[in-house]
Amino acid sequence: RGEELGSTVGYSVRNDVRPPNSRGDGSIEFVTVGILLRRLMDPRDPDLKRYTHVVVDEVHERDLMTDFLLILLKELLV
Image 1: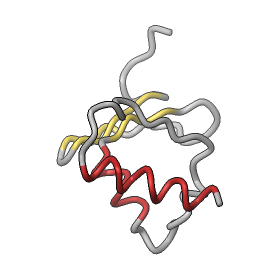
Image 2: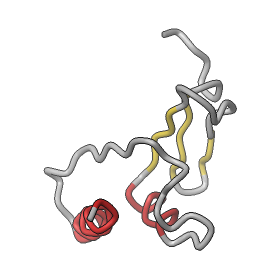
Image 3: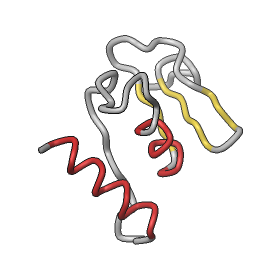
């Protein structure tokens, strides 16, 4: 849509963080598997209630962290 990075679209990768400024309707943030796992361990929001959608990309590149993330996300749905 031609938006500037940081307005409604952001990212978090290790120590490089550019979250979206508008956390309301329509914001999206790209994060790594490790970042999402850390957010699942956050005692303030362990069920990820602050998010409406979680899209896991590149799951064909299987590794232990991704498998663990998928297990935890599945448990949230049950």
